[in-house]
Image (cartoon, rainbow over the protein chains, first blue to last red):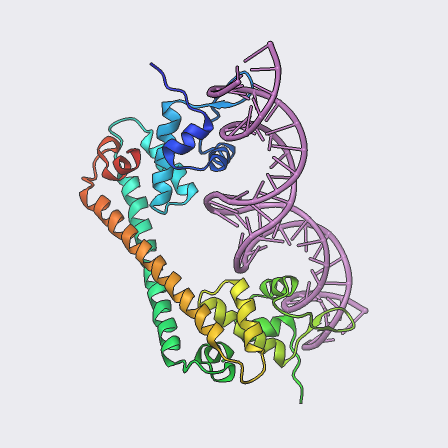
Length: 133
Length: 133
DNA sequence: ATACGACCTATAGCAACTATAGGTTCAAGC
DNA sequence: GCTTGAACCTATAGTTGCTATAGGTCGTAT
């Protein structure tokens, strides 16, 4: 029993937009599927699985370039150590933490500015003051 | 006494790259400055102040489109209420907090995956498992 | 007078899509 | 069998906020 999906089906199954699927094909993240007589793309289970992988990796914030690496690692023969995956994920975690730290600092600054703003006129606005130097 | 700056000077004074200054001019964030006989841009104090404003607003994470709004509000006559600024800044703060929340959730997910990874082979890797569904 | 850094324009590229235009195919209902 | 309309097709341009490249000109210090 073999499953066939249209590009719309695949989008629904994976939570991916149709245009994005075509885009992934164009940049080589997904392989070219078969075509119907009229030229419509026909996908199988392996495309669905691969796209699901891509989608989840993107949800975890990995770049498409990193997704490429993760895909190729995940397709290595059984027994291959997963140290590379570990390394990629750890580095990503570090970056996520750095972003959180930067945004928290920004949050504090904005809170400070809004706190001291007396909400009156533009020449007394603490937010504008902070920008004007 | 009037001050004149070359584009390089302006970049140094504001911490902005020369190409970025030209880009800001192109998209209308900065007005076109005067030119030397040979066609080099000549800036004055008002350009420096405006660019400083832009730069600081960008550092606070405001989009260029929002920076445009902030600039135009800051140039309204004295006495204009700053409620709009307040509104823009508050909304931005909300967005910053949303981003922090999303990244924290992501951080937790990644930590969890890395924690349970036994660091062995690709077919047992918890990180890849999570992506494979 | 000459060297050389700083400047000039125009165009393309980056990430990761999204939007638009204009045309074709497929499947369901009559 | 025919029609309708949603879903599909391609190609190209736009988004944000810059950065990079190429190929040339200007300004100033010696």
